[in-house]
Image 1: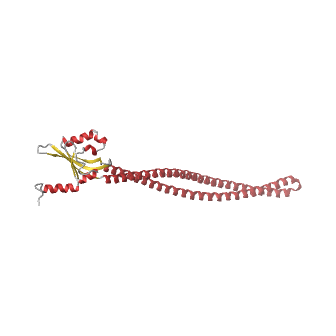
Image 2: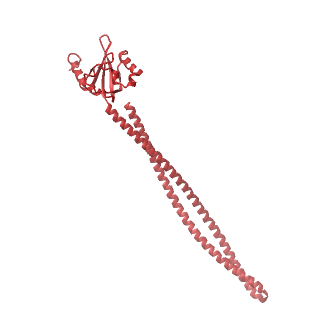
Image 3: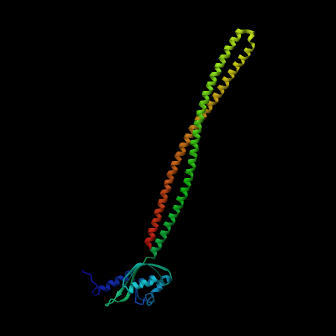
Length: 303
């Protein structure tokens, strides 16, 4: 069955539109000549009391007194073009309404405008919900950014501290290695002293033998050789004591070196962990950025 606007089909179509959509009709003086129940209810009026009201009464004062308002009606009445957009209006109680509306001029047989019809959808609740959602997203993004920035600064500070400690550990390790080398050199030196002491002792022993052969005539020489032998023995004992102490120091240096290496490895592992955390903060910041972009998109869509 073909559809035409001939006969009563035109009436059926208009009834269907008036039943489901908010419809209001203005004359060329911009006053209401008709409003169905849906539109009257949206605006807070009865279908009777809304008749004859000027279009300006439904607009914000700033807009009603603006050039944009004049251009709006010029487009409808003079250029005879329709207008479609999201519009801000106010109801009888002065509350803000957000409508998705289309205005179009009705022309007579001479193509002159005789009425302007507006069909609208009340999207106030949707826009309010959307605005709240956008605000929450923006607030969440702001919180994430603050957390990310704070965490980033803390991690950078801690990482710098660990780097400094790591450098000190490297310095300590190098110092310990140098100490160990010096101890080894001193040990070699003490070994030479010990060898000289042994040779001195041997010389004093030989001198004692020669003294015995010479007899009483070399009494003074004997005293000297005795002192040489005692000195050699004392030198050997002192050398042994120092060498023993150096061995102990060397052992301690080895322990410090091993401990320093373990500490360094731990610090390096901690630094790597901090880098991972820093990476997570960067991802957190990227997420916050995406939330901001999403909020901007939602805000743009709500305009």
